[in-house]
Each structure stands twice: as C-alpha cells, then as structure tokens.
Length: 167
Length: 305
Image (cartoon, rainbow over all chains, first blue to last red; front, top):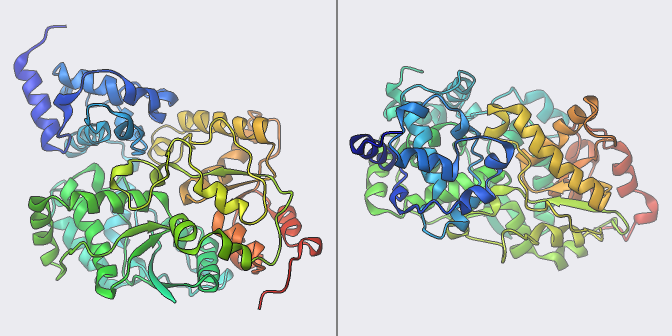
C-alpha cells in the first residue's frame, strides 16, 4: 500500500473533528482489541485495526464497513488503554463520519424517526401492557407529552442531524 | 424519605412496564421515594444522536438532566445504556466550551444545564443508599438454596472515570452478587461473568454475531453454575437473555431449557411478596414455576407490615 500524507491528514482531521480527539496517541498495542466484545464476535474493523486503517489514511476506503455500528459502546477499551486514546471515541467518530455521509443501514433510520416523533428511539404502544401490570396507561415520558416532543424536535431540527434530510 | 428522579428510558416503560412497576413497589418500602421526570425522553440511545453529532447527544441528554435539576433531585436509571449515555454526556459537559455551545442550543427550548444532578443506576441506589441489611429486613420470602447467575451488563461498569459509583474492579463486579445474596440466594462465580451479552448495536447490526457471543456466555453460565435463574440489572441484557435463549433452543444450539431471567428488582419484589402479575408479568420464557417456588409457603420468613 502506498502511504499518502495528505490522506493521513484528512483521516486524522476528520476523526478528531467528530470527537476522536486522541487518535494520534495510539501505539497499536492492541489492548483495546483484546477486551472488545465486537472484535471477539468477529467484526473486522474495530479498536486497534480501525485505528490502524485511519492512521494509514484509509478513510473513504472503509466507509461502507459496518463494524463501527457493531460497537456496543461498552468502553472496555477506554478502561484498558495505556495511552488514554479512548478508542471508543475514535470508533464513534468514524461512525459519525459514516452517518453524516449517510453510509449507514436503512434499519437505523427507524430509530431516528422514532426519536424525532416520540422522543423514544424504541417505541411501541405501551398502553395495554401498562394497564395489565397496574400502571397508568400513559408514561410520564415524552411519548405522551406534546411540549416535550416539540422540545426534542427543536433540538434535532436545529442540529447537524436536521440537515441530513431524514425528518 | 429520600427523593430521587426516576428516569425510565424506553424499553422499561414501553416494553417491560412490569420492571417499572417493580421499582415503584419496592423503593418506597426501602425508604426511597422515586419521583417522575415528566417529559423525559430517550437518553438518547447510542444508535441515534451519539452516532451523528456529539453536541446533539449532549443537548438531548442535558435536557433530560435539567428535568431533574429543576426538581432538585438526582437521577436513578434502570437501563444500563441510559446510565452510560447520561453519565458520559454529563462528563462531556464539564468542558467549558462544549457547555456553552450546548446551553446555546438548549436556550431554544428554555432550558439550561447546570450540572447539579448526579446520575445513579438502580443497582447503585440499592447497594449504596439502601444496603443489604435494609433489604434483608424487608424480605417476606427467603431465596435460600436458589442458585442465581448474575449479569451486570456493560454500561454500569466502564469507563470508571465518568461514573459516580464504580466497582472496585469492573472486570470482577460484585455489587449485583451482593444484592442477590441479600435475598438468601447462592450466587456462584462463572468465568464469563463480565462478558457482553451481545444486545444493543451488535444485535441490530449482525444478529448472528450477537447470538454467537451470547451463546458463549450462556454456556459458561449453564456449565459452570447450573443456575436456577439469571438476574440482571440491565434492561437490554434482560431482553437478550429472555428472547435469545428460546431462539438458540429452537435452532438446536443449546441442549437445555431456557433459564428464567429476571431484572433484579423483579426478583426482590417477588421476595418482598408483591404480586407477580404486576412485577414479573412479561417474558418470553415461562417463569411460572420459579415464581411459585420463590413465593412458596415454606420460604415464608414473616409477614411484612
């Protein structure tokens, strides 16, 4: 592989911009990958190997890989990293880069729509089940609170998420 | 009685309201008054705003936190993901520039984040504020002789530098074990104790990889403990254990019957004598026989007033 400094700079700047601030501290020791449930489950581009690709300037080349969405956000990596890279922040920064390029699975759109419309990423009508266990049918949450829903919609619409054309 | 803001999240109030009911039943008896956080939304879940934009994540989390701040209470969440997301957002908000930017967004909905409410998990409140002794005092049935495998779940453990309450060793968690032992149950160790169950982003991204990870954990529980039941303090882990064991069984990938699974406060509510049709009513796996065993006459300790 040919290493191109411009591509490395672009990858690093992009990741730092999306929150992976400490990517340059990585020494590729692999402690993160040793404790990562996603790596254990077989996702190829998480933790050490994702960081390696990014530090080699491979950003666009891996945009379609779904590994970052398999990250459980468990932060085992953050706990063990001897360099304070906070690898999960790098994984999430890469995921944000993918998301803002609309490179994510269509199944994920449902959660964004649910969040925008009800304030809940996971939404099912709870009224019957709640009644059955002796609770008020309506939750005290945004799902049944018009003002709360409006607040959530305002926050999302005013954010970079509002510019993606999803809502 | 100490008040605490009950942050419900999504899965508990919408899919597993019997877990919510178990909170509402047990906490007042244990000296804690949960108060509603009216209008609270999703934390927001990892696959939503946190996957798009850091400040949008912080704005939605901070909005939830301000609901507690306005009432002068801390937050207690029953969902590990909510605990992780809210705690991390609060940690990000310690950065002055970020706080300024996020508060500028929140101004559009007439709110401002102050950082005065702390984030706790239900397990933390039970372990640190209530304590095992108080729990023992309020039991109606003893779980003596029952074998429990515990599942703490990821987001209550790592990273320890952003959480208000942490385990001495997050790779060897003990809080949930001690809470279960307080009911009289036996809680054997198993080698995959801290392992991830595979729920969450992994399951929605690649269900087969998720099931593979889950199966390894489950086999470790079965072979090393032969537990009568599994107890968790994570609502996502609860859903994974309850819905994926029957899938593995149907596919012939496990050769034993699915192990009944409970959220910890459901188990405690049953041990305190509450009505199972309210506090442990919704599951894929049939929990009827273990519930009858828990609330059987021979286990009666005393009548709780």
